[in-house]
Image (cartoon, rainbow, N blue to C red):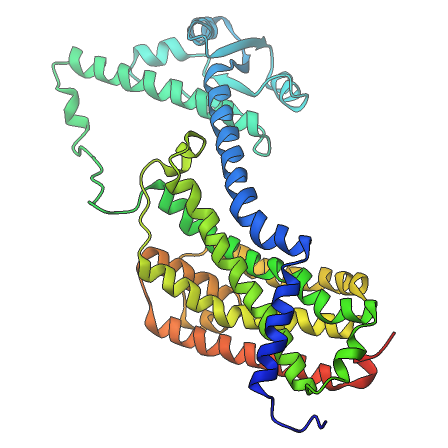
Length: 405
């Protein structure tokens, strides 16, 4: 047998089928590729929805604690706030006392009211009200929101009364009446959520779903001592690496497609636990789904090359897992940043691997295709995938790496 021979399609196919079957006999792969996307992902969305609903109910029902810098002139306001039953008032003498109570988490926020409030309201002058908050603390921000909402509502009513007393129609200060009219067939809030989350989830699913498969392909066989048997078979090393490589690519694609299915379940199941995400409707153009699958193909090849290279270089699966720690941020960070970027970006971004695929998925879901961006990103991704495949194949030719123990 000579490694210079061209790869045999039949042998590559035989190796691919063998490896693909063995990959799905591994319970770890079944968990990450099948059980995770189809069961754990929908369950996670249900739990998130329940948590969000519970938090909203808690915010609505719980009293907000306020430390009010008190004075004789503010007593009426303190009484008014307490009577709403939304607030629990703690009078304090100074602003510093309010700040201390906030830092000690004894109140959500502090309130400082202009001591000349009655005189200023009588003279139809604005009253300065300051909310003292901790911008890094959730309850403090919730308290501020409730306080501002209360005074904005009261201020609007006071303004209307003043205008009516002067014989002026209150509508004179509202020259525009704003209403929202959703277009027929447009995406709802569920679609907005999907566009933000799907690119990140799909890319991470494609990558993480193939980790165990790739690491078992070479590092695992080194560990079990079965790789040498395969190397002395009639198949060339190119046949072997292409067969194994194809199996890992297939696992990446299966993982991504099942992740799409797992994400669609909450929108289409009609189960009450998913009401929070399904409300508002969902539009998924079949062409968008085709575009998503097409863009994941070169990305899966890239991931397979990266993971198979690590698997080939490592002595065993434990060492491969150690190397994975350095690789994960390279994949995770671009995918994560795509959540905060719009679909319309500079053309040069198409050259950034992983991020370009994330943004194409966003474009596909929005139905706003930038063909120049997609074309450049696809070419770049194919080039990166080709480099990954070439590098993995080259590593497989090196005896000192392949046989090292």
